[in-house]
Image 1: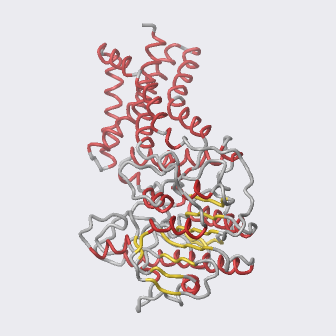
Image 2 (image 1 turned 60 degrees about the horizontal axis):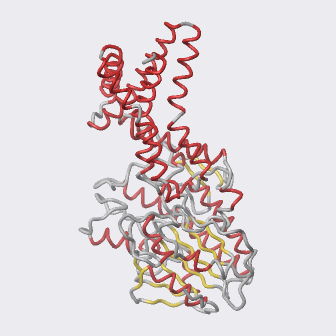
Length: 511
């Protein structure tokens, strides 16, 4: 075999096992990442090229240029990249076997890199193995493309204008995320009017279903369940290809759709206002930059030893935009929430999407606003007056068994929930001023809750602890019927599976 071909196959093999395979494996098993990122098929193609081609192509290009200068120099460059990819692969091996001491982890990974380099230089069987293993590169790429097809297989109706429906009420269905009922209550079990005046106003104008429960503790199951009125099944993914019959597709022929989904993709492309054809049929550099930045964080969290990982943003609070989780320590800093609305990250981006959705709602006399916001979900970074602060870093999903940290978590959560309360209050006021409130069907609920019980997981339960189960599954649910004049309390047992049938019954839409 010619040296240049052998060298290229060695680089391809090591770049694949060190970089391509770990990233494709992570993203292929976590498809909701693509629902959250809202990237286009062109941006996916760019990402695949970046992961599968660029590491190998960069190394091969540098080696080729060096070889043109001097053959010995070219050999040194080749050996350097073999060692580099081998050491990166070594970090993954070290992480898998559980070596947590950073210095020892680095020594072992460097040793693995040296061993790989030595084997490729000295042992014919290792060179032969590398040649055959290089065939993994195109195979992994093909497998990954097939894995992510559900995220990009959707219905793309032609753009059309739906007139405001005659005699049908405007529809507002808002799903907040990680919002348990208990946090809204005072000592008497009523909505706390001092802490949450917006929700108290909502309760005074609507029917509060006090015994409403969620059907899942996971967003990627709970939100599709709300939008389809179907019990989640194992293996479901939050994409239109898995849930073709949903609130968006059922209402699309009767209502202009004002839609936003923070973590799912059930709305047909070209239909929802936030997924326009122009936006999702092009390459958006800011969106690509955000997505690639997230992939580097994910790769670092999988690769680096424990101390080095502590400097990376947490990946446990969301499906993407991890930079917003931050790693800020020490003192807190504040900034107005509108100061960086253009940043496509975290709570600030959710506020931007809220404002955009509210503006669209006020300009239409009868639309269907179907909205899921990733609030008051972590990261907790909002004050009640919608300022953003950088507080202590997130320490994981397990509430400490002792100490004040669970209380600190809960206090920070209440701050962000008060910010959501402000949004609800403002929405009601704007709808009343626009003449929309009285005639609208308004539903406000949550997909699931969160628990702050010491020593227990915030977002996972094995149903052994009743208090934790109640925290996770008991949710707020407020329904204001068209022309409802006063509030009431309903203690019937309901779930958020009942919401879509309610929308269809009130609007008179047959399915």
